[in-house]
Length: 305
Image (cartoon, rainbow, N blue to C red):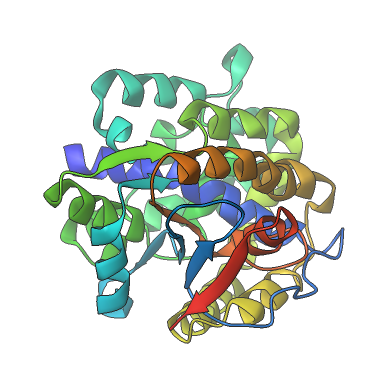
């Protein structure tokens, strides 16, 4: 049960912004690939760095049979002085942090999903979660956007607790811990949770319903995304993400500004010691992706295959 709670929080904190930003990228044209090279692993050098650091694009949750981590990636984790994720992954195992994040995931003012939906739409949502073995009564007060992570792939308690689905972040963290690496984050979990406060609950609820109504299409899209990921096709992933309609007005909040915020933090960490960064692959490509932004700051960023 403890592992399920940790995995659930990991999904809420990390994966929810990804499911949302996938729909958001079309608005500002970020989908236009500024990065022609395709790789999940990138070497960062130059700009005064004494030694190179490395950037790796993850897919936050993936079927165990699709999971892979190359020997070269493992070797560069070994060489790094520290391993940094979007958030400090070790902190996710802290009970106090978990309780705080669960509170942050709830709607204010005692609002429930039932308050935001028609009876017809509520029944659609309830049926979906009942089939997953997640009674909606336990999720009623959760911000609807977080529930969208359960609409694109099998994130039922059975799948998560049985090991059918695995997290790249958790697997990389295990390797880092085995090597006694210092583990850090580019932003706080609380910041990631707070991003959705700018999106009205009603808009979140409407998007949840639409996600469930198009669940089959969502599963197909996720399967296509996994295939692109396995091919290390960052440009293809960026293009695919840009083809979805949705909450384009929130792209700057969910993706662009976060990428920009990370660059100076990464610069400070790399100047201190060689760092292995592991962030969602959706952050890498495009004109405002991390690779393009690092190059804009004068770093040499090269794919490693």
